Length: 93
Image 1 (cartoon, rainbow, N blue to C red):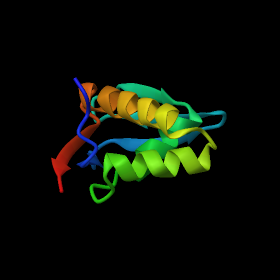
Image 2 (image 1 turned 90 degrees about the vertical axis):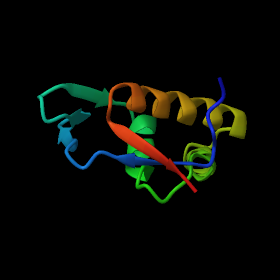
Image 3 (image 1 turned 30 degrees about the vertical axis):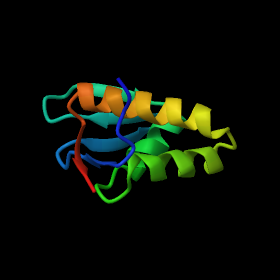
């Protein structure tokens, strides 16, 4: 199933981002933690509820100097993981 690139993923406000020395960690209210790599952190920061997945792909491709196909795969996979973990919610434009 393909991800709708018009979705507007938004971070849940009760999930906090913490920099733990070498790691960037998301912490849920229940205390569950998720360690983010640099790409996932950039995607997390862009999940503001006003930026479409398509716009996230463009930004990630530029920031990390990767082709659009790679950025699309990375962004959609990461958003799917965030959504499955209950870290983001999506609406549509």
